[in-house]
Length: 220
Image 1: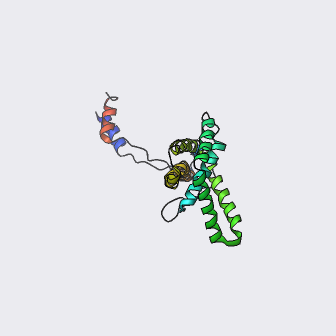
Image 2: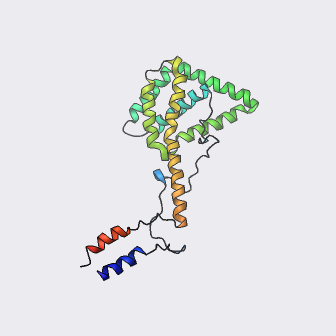
Image 3: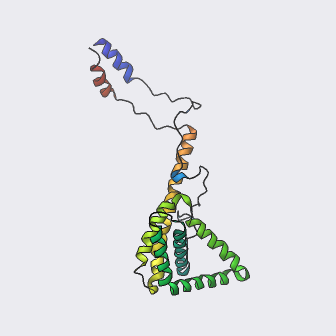
């Protein structure tokens, strides 16, 4: 019993000593999500905490046209087991919403003319390129294709007069896979910075009571 008391006293008075700051690390670094590059650029957040994507603060016409652009990207880029139906659904949407989409396109161009004057076409082209590139980002490809199929399926029952309202609700659904990726990438950045500093989660120490029960089973 004296031996047990000495062992328990030594165990309960032990302190956790942090390793030297320059200690070599043997654990693997965190990996960027969805196969993204370690130096991937993602949009900054605005004052409301929203990512500064090309889909912020749009008019009704712009929202409708961005939905059309997103679904065009899906029809061209979602090459999976459902690609034939995706293309067919997109073509049906273009036929069913021909007038509402034409009105949205005209409204967007009119707005650009009013805001940018003689150079409106160049500004419009740059913005549309930005929109298409946004929806074509590879890390969110699979989630985006799923969202696009869901939006196309719901669009089958939308009347032209309702399309602008439908687009306002559909656009966040189409954007969500990308903002989800951005949040995951921010988490990765924090974890990678912590790994570079050599931070480690605290080591759980056994309590004196636990140690007593463990050692009593070993010491006669």
